[in-house]
Amino acid sequence: MADLLLRLEIEDFLYAEAELLDNRRYEEWLDLFTEDCHYWMPIRSTRVAGDEEHELTREWENSYFDDDKLTLRQRVAKLGTGFAWSEEPPSRTRHVVSNVRIRAGASPDELTAVCNFITYRTRLSTDEDVWIGERHDTLRKVDGRWMIAARKIYLDQAVLKSKNLSSFL
Amino acid sequence: MTVDMAELVDRDRGMISRRILWDEEVYQLELDRIYMRCWLLLCHESQVAQPGQYFTTWMGDEPIIVTRDRDHQVRAMINSCRHRGNSVCRADAGQTRAFLCAYHGWTYGLDGSLIGVPGDEERYHGDLDRSQWGLIRVPRVAIYKGLVFGTFDPSAPSLEEYLGQTRWALDYFLDQRAGGTEAVGGVYKWLIKSNWKLGADNIMGDNYHSAVTHRSALMVGHMTLARNEHRNGQPLTDAAGETRGARRARPGFTAPLGWGHGFMTDLQLAEGSDFAEYPEPLRSYYRETQPEIERRLGPVRARVKKINLTVFPNLCVNTSSNTMRVWQPRGPQQTEVWLWTVVDKDAPAEVKRLMRQAGQRHFSPAGLFEQDDMDNWELATRSAGGRVSRNFPLHYAMGLGHEQWATDGVVTRQINAINDESNQRAYYTGWADFMSGADWDELRRRREAWEGAAQPERGVAHG
Image 1 (cartoon, each protein chain N blue to C red):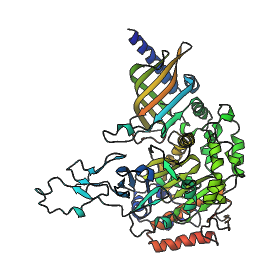
Image 2: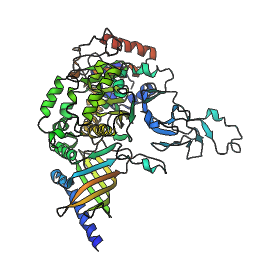
Image 3: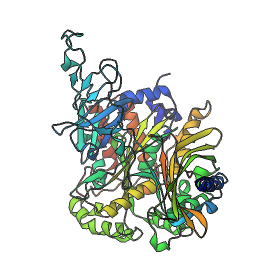
Image 4: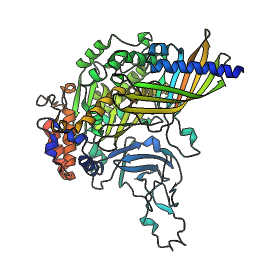
């Protein structure tokens, strides 16, 4: 029962986070991240069975995102300049989170929330992107509320079928 | 409809027809006359470092496997079984002893030779001459300082001759240090609905767009936002104007070369002065390696701050983000962008990390600069074919007739540089030369004429 309640609590947190992004409340979204956070999205490539260790780039290799709180702040600040053309006019996004699984964290006040995600983006008249994958979020309880200490985003696509990644996943 | 080059590229007036961005007939001719003839980048040598390592890529519309053979030779062949045409390799990269076709089992060695045929005796009765049925080889493969190139044209000039004066810039990218370079793991690949030439002409010469297209990125942190600790951890929002002013005053030059090549470079204001904005330990690394660069490449290149280079037709280098990219054509209105990060092999791990992040944070699909280029090119491509718009050429005439050529023999270049479109004009002049179907001797004459007219004392000296 406690497991179920914890999962519901975490799901609510993830849904609320998605709502902030879909409503472009980026400053509030930033506040969900700890100061020591790491936001990381490796690159996937097609590999034969048996070569899984090279399917995703490692921490010392290239990645779509390799951000800390400062660079996340820079991304949000960029969106607020009025000249961020990739988001001017802004894209419409819908973040869908599901299949949430809770795993024990490295310390009592941390846990890992694994989920599947679908993020839909449409912009201008007919542009469409669908990003699907798995996310591993390290959540930490700070002053009684959950915060994101680390996010790992594993996109299923090997060739990104999008002109850019100007949305957060 | 036929294709008349003079109509597409008006080099005297700097006018380019929009037809080169949308027309299928022009595109097919590009595959024939450019992608079947030019030297094309295949990969970095470090991606096929060990025997048995392979990397799959494209040359125009041909899928290519690059391998390191057991004799340590780098080979390249078309990824298509000679029996029914199926791909014999479906992975992006890996390690293998042979390529087994998943259809009927024809098997090819690392050099492309046919080494196994199921039923060789009982079904083919020994009639199949395996020596004639290997994978189709890329006839010429050559390596320039770690970059592996291939061409389908047996009569093409040597790779060194083809690269010509771009070597001045490539050496700055690849040969600063004795240990050479390596590719960081992972190639960014993404699909854009843009013609493949727009990005290539942008990188080699378009300083004009930065202040507008990249204004938001410049406002929140300049090229070195890998870690701006001197800004107290806060994004830069108000000093961008000063930074742009300093950029305008920066010395530099453009090198609009023959055969569609070209590069532009910023020079440092004074020795070592421009590294102040880089994070540590990158700042110290750049300062400390400067004498080695000077020893290896001479005094001018020791003063380089950054170089943006296009090697015709579709290889671009941006040294300040340690990246190179290939614009893989996918039809007239679609391009797959492939981006590599290339770092000094002997650099310390922490320096490599900052170099990798400079590429990722600026010029990968999520990069603060890269993000904002894409809609521009997609929308320019989309509107190019309009029944009315197609009759109105694009304006590439900035600075035409105002060129000031340098005469010190460093490299063919002009010194008022940064504020014109001479590199883009060189690109489309080269494009038209190849598209005309001229043979290599004629192309050599045109290159000589272009680079010779640009500068009387031509030739690459050790500058």
